[in-house]
Length: 156
Image 1: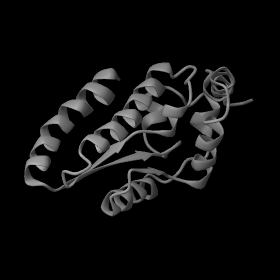
Image 2: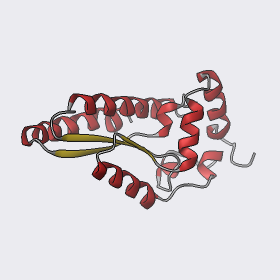
Image 3: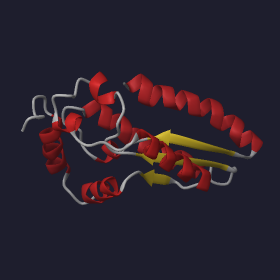
Image 4: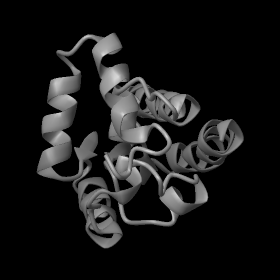
């Protein structure tokens, strides 16, 4: 997960951003997550990598500010992909929960990137969740996250 979410992303961005900066134009879209705002009980590494990506995007955007290159961070919430099956989370509340359409999330990200926005939190519920996370103590967030991600919680 660290190699995919952090090392791989940094490697690819280093390759393309340098060329974009040299051309004086380009758009970069990185998939962060609202998970990056929440201590991820039972998903600690995943949430931590998304926190890194969220932060990295804003820093890179600032570094490239006057270069003609924009960086947009797409921060979706629970999205309908194969992630939950691959991560063996189908026995959890979050695994069984209603999910956003992957197509809608992708369009939100693409549209924000084309506008040159710094960020897009896809979905009004996710915007509310991030706003709440920004004012809630981390220990409480970790406990609430455990309630939806702990194995065997799907039926509760």
